[in-house]
Image 1 (cartoon, rainbow, N blue to C red):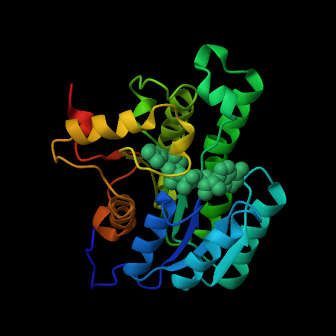
Image 2 (cartoon, rainbow, N blue to C red):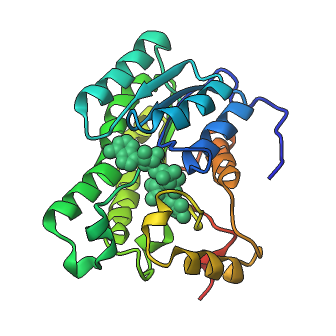
Length: 260
Ligand SMILES: NC(=O)c1ccc[n+]([C@@H]2O[C@H](COP(=O)([O-])OP(=O)(O)OC[C@H]3O[C@@H](n4cnc5c(N)ncnc54)[C@H](O)[C@@H]3O)[C@@H](O)[C@H]2O)c1
């Protein structure tokens, strides 16, 4: 997509984007879209191994805040929000684009998923959103918006999605409950559900290429989505144009989800 938005509709807004691993990451599409419409960015990376891939992207997007953030490390979670509080004093947008499950638990089918693997997948891919929301909300002094990335496999059975199906179902439910609890503060919370995209996380799923082919064939719009499609959807949701939307799961999939 080569679309460029001229009107800086999020000018001066402050956005925290988590989950960039590289230039193919959905989170990168979000960061790029927020930047294109004027937002200032805080960008995090999971660990020192990820840093060399993420740092040039953060520089390119002129992110004034660039920090390590493994969602399993409470001190890193707190450090990110302390830095945002001290540097910006407020936050408008939170994008959660993080998922992980141990490979053996992800690839073995739900019946064979261990309790430990299930708990780790749920904690990293789902409850981390709740933890972030808890610290982000007090900084959203004039309202705000929060997003977490889900997938169609939350609601329908997608072969090989396995444990991530129940995890994403929980994530979508969390978005609804957070939308309810944070609505009085004018904070809107959504799950965004992209169609399949060739990213590092997706490479952990068996037969992912089949999902890509099927999505392209079944999409009423006739093609796969790209990370900017997802990013601009999140950017739109963060604008006042979407101020009465909350608690939704929005599909950015070229219409695949409407098909029988
Ligand atoms: N690629 C797809 O087809 C697709 C479709 C729908 C939804 N999603 C979802 O989009 C989100 C982003 O995935 P992606 O496809 O862009 O892949 P990706 O690999 O680019 O992003 C996944 C990110 O999760 C991060 N992460 C994993 N464990 C972490 C931890 N403990 N702490 C901090 N970060 C951690 C990784 O570092 C990486 O940046 C995920 O929630 C994924 O489930 C992906």
